[in-house]
Image (cartoon, rainbow, N blue to C red; front, side, top):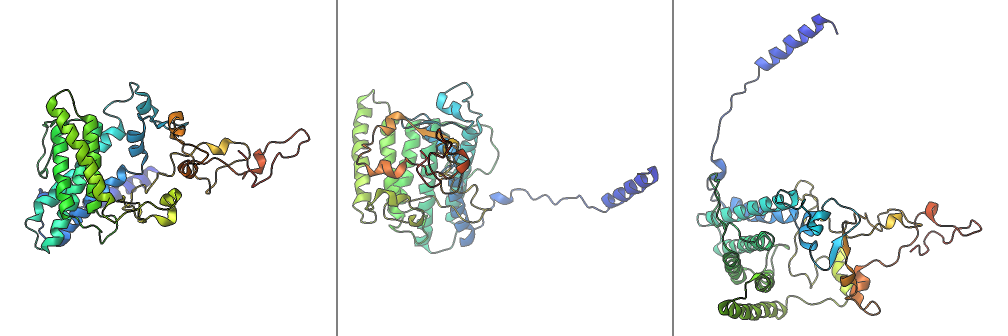
Length: 368
């Protein structure tokens, strides 16, 4: 390119830049202004559900809840094994730990915003109360997940409208009290059946209350007489709320354990409440990825290769020997429904051969 051409192009670019108006109209505080309309209020409630998809049915959520237990350990692959091994790499700046904190506090702030704006929203009062019960259920769930992972927390009940660089952590007991208060409000004001599948229900609040009481027992200090008395009360409360779910008539065990996990049977009588994903890639995030992380490395076995029927083996989590030995494999259908025990040959190129050079088995035969 000649110097003359370069000069002409440079002049042209300068001419274009001079035509662009870079002045901006600064609008500050817009997000913090109230918009007391039913549509905006309902959108805030709906948005409070969205962060669930960043944790549930994702590698992040499995990593922070399955590792460190006695039923699952690290699989053959994955870069977060140190969470299971408790090495020096496990620190507060790990993205799974940092992002879960950020996402759940963002969700709590959205819920707080909906609660704060509800008083000025003109809409059907019973529906508004139901929506408030939904966001208080969700706020309780987010705090419940956070307190189990991080211990003492900053309790926020009002929307954040200005930046702050200070935070005070409330003790674990106070966090559990806030969770229980939200869930009791939710139980009292949620319907037994939601018109839109996936919204929180009375049964979901009761079930979570039972779990919260049991978990507070685990996390509590029983060194004092007062704590021991509260623990006895927590046992009774956990049993009470579990019985409310059981006796509600809304739920029932399916005849076959495997039917709970049937892709064509996602809405069934055993499901009390479930996180919803969508078919829209703009709103569903990564989608439900739970099927990826628990498969073994079958594609390296003789006569096998990766295919859709057997799934993509990301092999992040492996059941422990202790877990596997809990099942009586001769008669427990739960073991047969949860664990793959047989693989059928789908790769002729890797089928082993006998001494005469003939394949030991054929495509479709049992490979392993």
